[in-house]
Length: 317
Image (cartoon, rainbow, N blue to C red):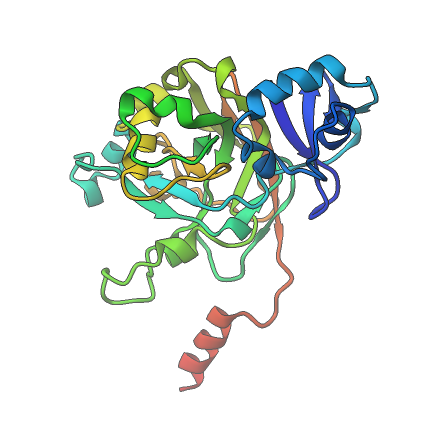
């Protein structure tokens, strides 16, 4: 099954996608006499019986549906509790970044994070921040947690997964790597990955039962029809089950938590031409069997931005 968030920004409703039509989840639950007012996908996943309830909903839904093509899709999980980012988690990406990694993958997953406010819809425009000149893309398989999970073994870890979605893990590389600092220790990974719009996700949440093996999915990125990334989740240093198990050994994972599993080679930062993104660029990210998302980079109309203020102070000083 595919679950979607649809409607205007900040007022999205949860729905079930059937062919090219959306069944409104709240109305369907009401028809089944289930008391869950205006649910989001995240709050729906908090029910231990959410998957069985979906089956019941589909059996009793009224047929009052919305055409997919007539509505805006939002991020399937608009405000997850956590957005975990796994860095340097494909062998091809580790190799292309050899000047930093020496070509050696980490011995344990490298865990970064993004602000939940960075999430945006699968086809929404993304504003180009005034603070960067090195905006980069990374297609990734997103994993959504389906229940409270703590210290789960790798052999059982996929049972904690609700489903999968496509993510573009955008980064302002100059901010992320704190290029203004002389000391490379002072990196700001979190801020560099957390600008508004830097985490487009979707186009829907594909439930786990439809993807029995998340380790065989293609990963591709196009920028203005130029294929930039062409890899696979088979290239992951740490697979989905290993990541869920590892994270749960430290953090109690909650329903709706999102894990970005890693991106293949081809990012702008390690291309010879350093082909970063700029306003007007169209980025399409695709994960096989899950779907694709497509976002246009637009100008941000900001005249007074902290980095610009700092530059002016340094110049005038």
